[in-house]
Image (cartoon, rainbow, N blue to C red; front, side):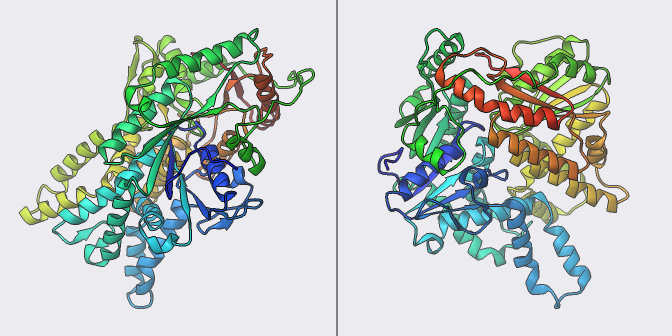
Length: 570
């Protein structure tokens, strides 16, 4: 079976905007290499991994053979499971040695978002920087989370190596640095492996649309700044209309042509692979194998299946219901690439037009919220949570308060601690809490990062809430009230956004269950970019439209409020 890439290096990363098909391309590549006789390990670093569903095998943190593909194993790096193992590795040796109160204190110290991040990074580094862990493999393929999360992951080897080199106080939020010698060497090896063009390739996956190509260019630029230069570009879902009489097909093809004609020079210079839009869902080994071979012909279709039984609500009705509350928070959530930003911008503009004061913002480092919002509008303010800016604000605040009465050495140690890569997680969380608090006085519409990153943010909210309950004071009001506000359906309106496809629907259903466990209700579902409301005659589009119907029926039976937004070229 041919591979999508000639002469692949031993390590391959697949990254890109949410929903561009990173997992599909990574899986098709892994299957092709394994069927050439290579021993391959496929690893997901996405906290909301869907490798299990796509490959049809239950995965965890240990390699599992993929049924039907000899030589191919896969695993998920689960941040929470990694954090549990990390905590036990640190705390375990002291059980029965130190008093129970000291053990509890150690466990609490290692229960934050910082530990979750470093534990997942530790697992990632072993596969990248520890040659003994992968010596029996010909290829290690990383299917990564959407861009913002992945850029953060790829920055960490350098960030932690620098922190180790510059830290003179001998401590870190992970414990004494003298006990982290092995990690220092591991992170340095990971740092070197990422930058080795002989061993590592980063594949930028994009769709033939402006937003995803713009993000691919941003990623290319940031990776180059990190010294990662062996890059390739894969354009996934290139569409050629088979029926020129179909206006939707013509519009889809023209949109792709226009986007590729404006390819930024930096991307245009990269080696490129184009993969055609296929007429079928990409779940299961057979479908993925077909993707690697250029797809298969659309099945012959008779009359289009009827969709009269799919009863949905109009977007205007949802906005009117939210508007009636007068103020509050709207959160759009879901898998990357489903159009959360577009839906958030649409709701924000409609609320502003109704006369409300509205802030539209995002927790997604890779979001294009200002572009999606269009031009200026009275009552509408657009902002974004900037991790770099928030980290600087948070550090200055801590130095001005906690460090105010310290002596010179104490302030130096505090400043050193704040240079830890973990500080960014705390600062972004604080900024999110402040955004939610802003819903007391007006509408705040928040476009969240893709599911995995959002789950980590909600986990942090719960962890902080537990800490706050133990303390009478000391935490900002915005942090103290965050979880109660998110749980109040008269204040917070959670909108789940999806496409009518298997993995976005199933990922959003899992997100809904995770939200329910945190007592955060979902107000409505939006099925975005659907072909079902449209008349299409192109065989590829007819096939994809037919495949939407079971998911639309499932959601309209499941949720009291479901909105279907038709595909449009803009």
